[in-house]
Length: 272
Image (tube, rainbow, N blue to C red; front, side, top):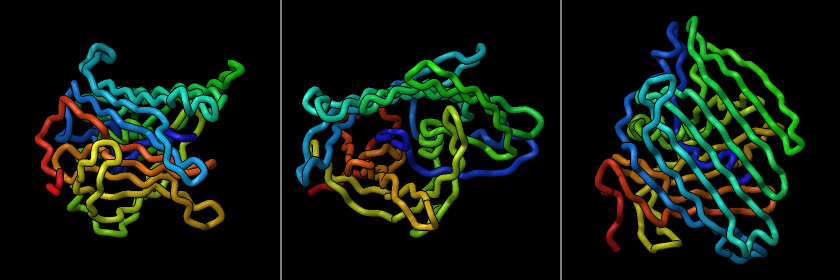
């Protein structure tokens, strides 16, 4: 599934705690409400890179149970040209407290004719993270589950937003971190590998960024399988500027095209 592990995509720290809610909070130093990022999508189609569509992510303020919170959306759409071969219409939503504690996650997806809706509700009591999970398939069949853990748990969107405030100096090239991530019907461990720093030029606008490079990988049958490699700006914004997605039918890439409402000045652009 193309953007199931999108961006998501960055890095996170897990911790055990006697007070899960307090431990799962974190200071936001990377973004403000009003931020919007726009990406161009490309697919490798029969050894040729073709324009495939667009993706947009935005962050705004909202209310959750009467308290101020962040609400983020990630919307991806294939172009009419690609729809003839593979149609994708994905919308991901995350709600977090102002100190980055997950509250709610939803993904509605139509990917190549496969339709489903994931939802996760978070609560915190007794030193644990409690999840209520719901999965709805294209036939309207609904599955509800619950899951409790002494660890902090995240979904793809909340993990990415929280991780943007972490310091790259805390990582050494080759470091690996196991991360438990939730969707509507399960919690699974994904391994994050820090690949180091490199410069990369955007395909869409020609801008070159100094980036921190990370990969999410799985280990089916004990062998490393790369899911996604992503590149975040090496500055205080830590915005995802490029993503390489390894799909069942090939490779897809997303390049940052436009950004607005950033909290900090972009200092990671490399002058050519």
